[in-house]
Image (cartoon, rainbow, N blue to C red; front, side, top):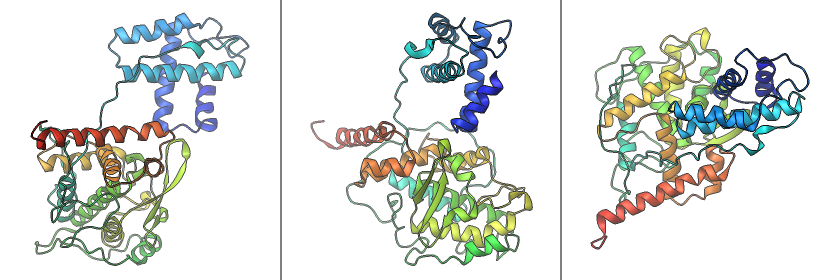
Length: 375
Protein backbone atom coordinates (compact mmCIF):
# COMPACT_ATOMS: atom_id res chain seq x y z
CA UNK A 1 0.00 0.00 0.00
CA UNK A 2 2.81 2.41 0.84
CA UNK A 3 4.36 1.66 -2.56
CA UNK A 4 1.15 2.75 -4.25
CA UNK A 5 1.11 5.93 -2.16
CA UNK A 6 4.76 6.56 -3.05
CA UNK A 7 3.93 6.20 -6.75
CA UNK A 8 1.11 8.71 -6.31
CA UNK A 9 3.42 11.22 -4.64
CA UNK A 10 6.17 10.80 -7.21
CA UNK A 11 4.24 10.58 -10.47
CA UNK A 12 0.95 12.38 -9.86
CA UNK A 13 1.91 15.02 -7.31
CA UNK A 14 5.51 15.54 -8.46
CA UNK A 15 6.84 15.82 -4.91
CA UNK A 16 10.54 16.33 -4.34
CA UNK A 17 12.66 13.48 -3.00
CA UNK A 18 12.94 15.15 0.40
CA UNK A 19 9.17 15.61 0.70
CA UNK A 20 8.57 12.09 -0.56
CA UNK A 21 10.85 10.56 2.05
CA UNK A 22 9.38 12.68 4.84
CA UNK A 23 5.76 11.86 3.93
CA UNK A 24 6.44 8.13 3.65
CA UNK A 25 8.18 8.18 7.02
CA UNK A 26 5.25 10.06 8.58
CA UNK A 27 2.61 7.74 7.10
CA UNK A 28 4.60 4.69 8.24
CA UNK A 29 4.57 6.16 11.76
CA UNK A 30 0.81 6.72 11.54
CA UNK A 31 0.27 3.17 10.30
CA UNK A 32 2.32 1.77 13.18
CA UNK A 33 0.14 3.70 15.65
CA UNK A 34 -3.20 2.63 14.14
CA UNK A 35 -2.31 -0.82 12.78
CA UNK A 36 0.51 -2.21 14.97
CA UNK A 37 -0.05 -5.60 13.32
CA UNK A 38 0.69 -4.07 9.88
CA UNK A 39 -1.32 -2.33 7.17
CA UNK A 40 -4.27 -4.35 5.81
CA UNK A 41 -4.33 -5.58 2.20
CA UNK A 42 -5.23 -3.16 -0.59
CA UNK A 43 -9.03 -3.54 -0.79
CA UNK A 44 -12.15 -1.33 -0.50
CA UNK A 45 -12.68 0.26 2.94
CA UNK A 46 -9.50 -1.42 4.19
CA UNK A 47 -8.50 1.65 6.20
CA UNK A 48 -11.88 2.46 7.80
CA UNK A 49 -10.39 1.88 11.25
CA UNK A 50 -8.64 5.23 10.84
CA UNK A 51 -10.73 8.06 12.28
CA UNK A 52 -10.25 11.64 13.46
CA UNK A 53 -9.59 10.56 17.06
CA UNK A 54 -6.86 8.21 15.86
CA UNK A 55 -5.19 11.01 13.91
CA UNK A 56 -5.39 13.38 16.85
CA UNK A 57 -4.01 10.74 19.19
CA UNK A 58 -1.07 10.15 16.86
CA UNK A 59 -0.24 13.85 16.72
CA UNK A 60 -0.66 14.17 20.50
CA UNK A 61 1.79 11.30 21.07
CA UNK A 62 4.31 12.99 18.78
CA UNK A 63 3.86 16.28 20.64
CA UNK A 64 4.46 14.57 23.98
CA UNK A 65 7.60 12.99 22.50
CA UNK A 66 8.94 16.51 21.86
CA UNK A 67 8.07 17.09 18.19
CA UNK A 68 8.22 20.76 17.21
CA UNK A 69 5.20 22.63 15.83
CA UNK A 70 6.83 22.57 12.38
CA UNK A 71 7.21 18.77 12.56
CA UNK A 72 3.61 18.35 13.73
CA UNK A 73 2.43 20.55 10.87
CA UNK A 74 4.28 18.34 8.40
CA UNK A 75 2.84 15.19 10.01
CA UNK A 76 -0.66 16.61 9.64
CA UNK A 77 0.01 17.54 6.00
CA UNK A 78 1.28 14.02 5.29
CA UNK A 79 -1.79 12.50 6.95
CA UNK A 80 -4.16 14.72 4.96
CA UNK A 81 -2.42 13.83 1.70
CA UNK A 82 -2.52 10.12 2.53
CA UNK A 83 -6.19 10.16 3.59
CA UNK A 84 -7.26 12.11 0.50
CA UNK A 85 -5.45 9.59 -1.71
CA UNK A 86 -6.94 6.64 0.21
CA UNK A 87 -10.44 8.10 -0.14
CA UNK A 88 -10.03 8.47 -3.91
CA UNK A 89 -8.75 4.89 -4.12
CA UNK A 90 -11.74 3.60 -2.12
CA UNK A 91 -9.60 2.52 0.83
CA UNK A 92 -11.48 4.92 3.11
CA UNK A 93 -15.24 5.41 3.13
CA UNK A 94 -14.84 8.88 4.67
CA UNK A 95 -11.82 11.16 4.83
CA UNK A 96 -11.18 11.64 8.58
CA UNK A 97 -8.44 14.23 8.02
CA UNK A 98 -10.81 16.90 6.67
CA UNK A 99 -11.22 18.31 10.20
CA UNK A 100 -7.66 17.65 11.36
CA UNK A 101 -5.85 20.72 12.63
CA UNK A 102 -2.18 20.94 13.53
CA UNK A 103 -0.49 23.47 15.84
CA UNK A 104 0.37 26.75 14.15
CA UNK A 105 3.93 26.90 12.94
CA UNK A 106 6.01 29.52 14.67
CA UNK A 107 7.10 32.24 12.27
CA UNK A 108 10.81 32.86 12.76
CA UNK A 109 12.29 35.81 10.92
CA UNK A 110 15.10 34.42 8.74
CA UNK A 111 18.67 35.62 9.26
CA UNK A 112 19.71 38.32 6.80
CA UNK A 113 23.20 39.63 6.05
CA UNK A 114 23.94 43.33 5.78
CA UNK A 115 25.11 44.52 2.39
CA UNK A 116 28.67 45.11 3.64
CA UNK A 117 28.76 41.53 4.87
CA UNK A 118 27.71 40.23 1.46
CA UNK A 119 30.53 42.19 -0.17
CA UNK A 120 33.07 40.68 2.21
CA UNK A 121 31.59 37.20 1.72
CA UNK A 122 31.78 37.31 -2.08
CA UNK A 123 35.14 39.07 -2.22
CA UNK A 124 36.57 36.56 0.25
CA UNK A 125 35.43 33.66 -1.93
CA UNK A 126 36.84 35.34 -5.06
CA UNK A 127 40.28 35.98 -3.55
CA UNK A 128 40.51 32.63 -1.77
CA UNK A 129 40.28 33.92 1.81
CA UNK A 130 37.77 31.14 2.59
CA UNK A 131 39.46 27.69 2.83
CA UNK A 132 38.12 25.20 0.32
CA UNK A 133 36.66 21.86 1.44
CA UNK A 134 37.81 22.24 5.05
CA UNK A 135 35.68 21.17 8.02
CA UNK A 136 33.46 23.91 9.42
CA UNK A 137 33.73 24.97 13.06
CA UNK A 138 30.83 26.36 15.08
CA UNK A 139 31.32 29.91 16.24
CA UNK A 140 28.99 32.00 18.42
CA UNK A 141 28.32 35.49 17.18
CA UNK A 142 25.60 38.12 17.13
CA UNK A 143 22.80 37.64 14.57
CA UNK A 144 23.32 39.65 11.41
CA UNK A 145 20.24 41.82 11.40
CA UNK A 146 20.48 45.56 10.82
CA UNK A 147 19.57 48.47 8.63
CA UNK A 148 21.81 49.24 5.65
CA UNK A 149 23.31 52.75 5.76
CA UNK A 150 21.37 55.48 4.03
CA UNK A 151 24.29 56.25 1.69
CA UNK A 152 26.10 53.28 0.24
CA UNK A 153 29.77 53.33 1.09
CA UNK A 154 32.46 52.48 -1.47
CA UNK A 155 32.70 48.72 -1.61
CA UNK A 156 29.25 48.10 -0.10
CA UNK A 157 27.42 45.14 -1.61
CA UNK A 158 25.07 45.79 -4.46
CA UNK A 159 21.47 44.56 -4.18
CA UNK A 160 20.90 41.14 -5.70
CA UNK A 161 21.38 41.31 -9.46
CA UNK A 162 22.97 44.78 -9.56
CA UNK A 163 26.47 45.57 -10.80
CA UNK A 164 29.54 45.15 -8.60
CA UNK A 165 31.23 48.37 -7.49
CA UNK A 166 34.41 49.54 -9.19
CA UNK A 167 37.65 48.02 -8.03
CA UNK A 168 36.42 44.42 -7.99
CA UNK A 169 35.75 41.95 -10.78
CA UNK A 170 35.06 43.77 -14.07
CA UNK A 171 31.37 44.04 -14.86
CA UNK A 172 31.13 46.66 -17.64
CA UNK A 173 30.79 44.19 -20.50
CA UNK A 174 28.37 41.36 -21.14
CA UNK A 175 30.31 38.09 -20.97
CA UNK A 176 30.52 36.13 -24.17
CA UNK A 177 29.46 32.49 -24.49
CA UNK A 178 32.94 31.10 -25.29
CA UNK A 179 33.35 29.55 -21.87
CA UNK A 180 29.88 28.05 -22.03
CA UNK A 181 30.52 26.53 -25.45
CA UNK A 182 33.91 25.15 -24.38
CA UNK A 183 32.41 23.56 -21.27
CA UNK A 184 29.73 21.86 -23.36
CA UNK A 185 31.96 20.61 -26.14
CA UNK A 186 35.25 19.79 -24.38
CA UNK A 187 34.77 19.89 -20.60
CA UNK A 188 37.98 18.05 -19.76
CA UNK A 189 40.36 20.50 -21.43
CA UNK A 190 41.78 22.95 -18.84
CA UNK A 191 42.16 26.52 -20.02
CA UNK A 192 44.56 27.71 -17.37
CA UNK A 193 45.30 28.03 -13.70
CA UNK A 194 43.83 31.21 -12.23
CA UNK A 195 45.43 33.12 -9.39
CA UNK A 196 44.11 36.06 -7.38
CA UNK A 197 45.67 39.39 -8.28
CA UNK A 198 49.22 39.60 -6.94
CA UNK A 199 49.05 36.23 -5.19
CA UNK A 200 51.48 33.37 -5.60
CA UNK A 201 50.41 30.66 -8.09
CA UNK A 202 47.86 28.16 -6.83
CA UNK A 203 47.65 24.47 -7.47
CA UNK A 204 45.20 23.88 -10.35
CA UNK A 205 42.70 22.02 -8.17
CA UNK A 206 42.82 24.65 -5.44
CA UNK A 207 42.24 27.37 -8.00
CA UNK A 208 39.38 25.39 -9.53
CA UNK A 209 37.70 24.93 -6.15
CA UNK A 210 38.06 28.63 -5.43
CA UNK A 211 36.43 29.51 -8.75
CA UNK A 212 33.60 27.03 -8.15
CA UNK A 213 32.88 28.36 -4.67
CA UNK A 214 32.99 31.97 -5.85
CA UNK A 215 30.60 31.22 -8.75
CA UNK A 216 28.21 29.28 -6.52
CA UNK A 217 28.08 32.00 -3.86
CA UNK A 218 27.58 34.72 -6.47
CA UNK A 219 24.76 32.77 -8.11
CA UNK A 220 23.06 31.94 -4.80
CA UNK A 221 22.95 35.60 -3.83
CA UNK A 222 22.21 36.99 -7.29
CA UNK A 223 19.34 34.60 -8.08
CA UNK A 224 18.05 33.44 -4.69
CA UNK A 225 17.89 29.81 -5.86
CA UNK A 226 17.66 26.96 -3.36
CA UNK A 227 20.74 24.81 -2.80
CA UNK A 228 19.01 21.78 -4.33
CA UNK A 229 18.23 23.83 -7.42
CA UNK A 230 21.82 25.07 -7.58
CA UNK A 231 23.45 21.64 -7.58
CA UNK A 232 20.84 20.32 -10.02
CA UNK A 233 21.80 22.84 -12.71
CA UNK A 234 23.34 21.68 -15.99
CA UNK A 235 25.64 23.76 -18.19
CA UNK A 236 22.97 24.30 -20.82
CA UNK A 237 20.62 25.77 -18.20
CA UNK A 238 22.79 28.90 -18.32
CA UNK A 239 22.36 31.75 -20.79
CA UNK A 240 25.37 34.00 -20.27
CA UNK A 241 24.26 36.42 -22.99
CA UNK A 242 20.95 37.15 -21.30
CA UNK A 243 22.27 36.53 -17.76
CA UNK A 244 19.51 34.05 -16.95
CA UNK A 245 19.39 30.51 -15.61
CA UNK A 246 16.67 27.91 -16.09
CA UNK A 247 15.77 26.36 -12.73
CA UNK A 248 13.74 23.25 -11.93
CA UNK A 249 12.11 23.96 -8.57
CA UNK A 250 9.72 22.27 -6.19
CA UNK A 251 7.00 20.22 -7.81
CA UNK A 252 9.09 20.06 -11.00
CA UNK A 253 8.08 23.64 -11.78
CA UNK A 254 10.46 25.35 -14.16
CA UNK A 255 11.28 29.04 -13.99
CA UNK A 256 13.83 31.36 -15.58
CA UNK A 257 15.75 33.50 -13.09
CA UNK A 258 17.96 36.50 -13.93
CA UNK A 259 21.33 37.21 -12.35
CA UNK A 260 23.75 40.12 -12.51
CA UNK A 261 27.02 40.63 -14.36
CA UNK A 262 29.22 39.85 -11.32
CA UNK A 263 27.64 36.39 -11.15
CA UNK A 264 27.98 36.02 -14.94
CA UNK A 265 31.69 36.85 -14.77
CA UNK A 266 32.22 34.39 -11.91
CA UNK A 267 30.37 31.67 -13.83
CA UNK A 268 32.39 32.35 -16.98
CA UNK A 269 35.65 32.04 -15.01
CA UNK A 270 34.45 28.77 -13.47
CA UNK A 271 33.38 27.32 -16.82
CA UNK A 272 36.56 28.26 -18.67
CA UNK A 273 39.20 27.79 -15.98
CA UNK A 274 37.80 25.76 -13.09
CA UNK A 275 35.30 23.18 -14.29
CA UNK A 276 37.69 21.61 -16.84
CA UNK A 277 40.14 20.85 -14.01
CA UNK A 278 37.61 19.05 -11.79
CA UNK A 279 35.29 17.56 -14.42
CA UNK A 280 35.06 13.76 -14.81
CA UNK A 281 32.68 11.71 -16.98
CA UNK A 282 30.52 10.95 -13.91
CA UNK A 283 29.53 14.63 -13.78
CA UNK A 284 27.97 14.59 -17.23
CA UNK A 285 26.44 18.01 -18.00
CA UNK A 286 26.46 19.17 -14.36
CA UNK A 287 27.27 22.86 -13.98
CA UNK A 288 29.03 22.40 -10.64
CA UNK A 289 31.31 19.46 -9.88
CA UNK A 290 32.85 18.17 -6.67
CA UNK A 291 36.43 17.35 -5.80
CA UNK A 292 36.08 13.84 -7.27
CA UNK A 293 34.67 15.07 -10.56
CA UNK A 294 31.04 14.04 -10.05
CA UNK A 295 28.07 16.39 -9.69
CA UNK A 296 28.37 18.62 -6.64
CA UNK A 297 26.10 17.50 -3.80
CA UNK A 298 23.79 19.58 -1.62
CA UNK A 299 25.67 18.69 1.56
CA UNK A 300 29.02 19.79 0.10
CA UNK A 301 27.46 23.04 -1.13
CA UNK A 302 26.04 23.72 2.33
CA UNK A 303 29.45 23.15 3.89
CA UNK A 304 30.99 25.60 1.44
CA UNK A 305 28.45 28.29 2.35
CA UNK A 306 28.89 27.57 6.07
CA UNK A 307 32.66 28.05 5.79
CA UNK A 308 32.22 31.33 3.94
CA UNK A 309 29.72 32.64 6.49
CA UNK A 310 31.88 31.50 9.39
CA UNK A 311 34.87 33.33 7.91
CA UNK A 312 32.97 36.62 8.19
CA UNK A 313 33.36 36.40 11.95
CA UNK A 314 30.44 38.70 12.76
CA UNK A 315 27.36 36.59 12.04
CA UNK A 316 25.87 33.39 13.40
CA UNK A 317 23.87 32.85 10.20
CA UNK A 318 24.58 29.56 8.44
CA UNK A 319 23.38 27.67 5.39
CA UNK A 320 22.60 28.51 1.73
CA UNK A 321 19.09 29.68 2.66
CA UNK A 322 20.73 32.66 4.37
CA UNK A 323 21.75 33.93 0.92
CA UNK A 324 18.25 33.26 -0.43
CA UNK A 325 16.72 35.22 2.46
CA UNK A 326 19.28 37.97 2.01
CA UNK A 327 18.69 38.29 -1.74
CA UNK A 328 14.92 38.56 -1.24
CA UNK A 329 15.22 41.11 1.56
CA UNK A 330 17.74 43.26 -0.33
CA UNK A 331 15.47 43.26 -3.38
CA UNK A 332 12.52 44.45 -1.31
CA UNK A 333 14.71 47.03 0.43
CA UNK A 334 15.73 48.27 -3.01
CA UNK A 335 12.13 48.74 -4.16
CA UNK A 336 11.29 45.45 -5.93
CA UNK A 337 7.60 44.55 -5.81
CA UNK A 338 6.46 41.49 -3.89
CA UNK A 339 5.08 39.64 -6.93
CA UNK A 340 8.40 39.88 -8.77
CA UNK A 341 10.25 38.51 -5.75
CA UNK A 342 7.72 35.69 -5.54
CA UNK A 343 8.41 34.71 -9.15
CA UNK A 344 12.17 34.98 -8.63
CA UNK A 345 12.10 32.67 -5.61
CA UNK A 346 9.60 30.23 -7.09
CA UNK A 347 7.09 30.50 -4.24
CA UNK A 348 3.70 29.02 -5.07
CA UNK A 349 2.01 31.30 -2.53
CA UNK A 350 2.48 35.02 -2.10
CA UNK A 351 2.01 34.52 1.65
CA UNK A 352 5.39 32.78 1.79
CA UNK A 353 7.10 35.73 0.13
CA UNK A 354 5.38 38.19 2.49
CA UNK A 355 7.61 36.93 5.30
CA UNK A 356 10.41 39.03 3.79
CA UNK A 357 8.35 42.19 4.16
CA UNK A 358 8.35 41.52 7.90
CA UNK A 359 12.13 41.15 7.79
CA UNK A 360 12.45 44.53 6.10
CA UNK A 361 10.17 46.13 8.70
CA UNK A 362 12.21 44.58 11.51
CA UNK A 363 15.41 45.97 9.98
CA UNK A 364 13.75 49.40 9.81
CA UNK A 365 12.67 49.19 13.44
CA UNK A 366 16.14 48.12 14.54
CA UNK A 367 17.70 51.03 12.70
CA UNK A 368 15.12 53.40 14.19
CA UNK A 369 15.83 52.15 17.71
CA UNK A 370 19.57 52.65 17.19
CA UNK A 371 19.41 56.04 15.51
CA UNK A 372 16.39 58.01 16.71
CA UNK A 373 17.03 60.11 19.86
CA UNK A 374 13.56 59.42 21.24
CA UNK A 375 13.34 55.75 20.31
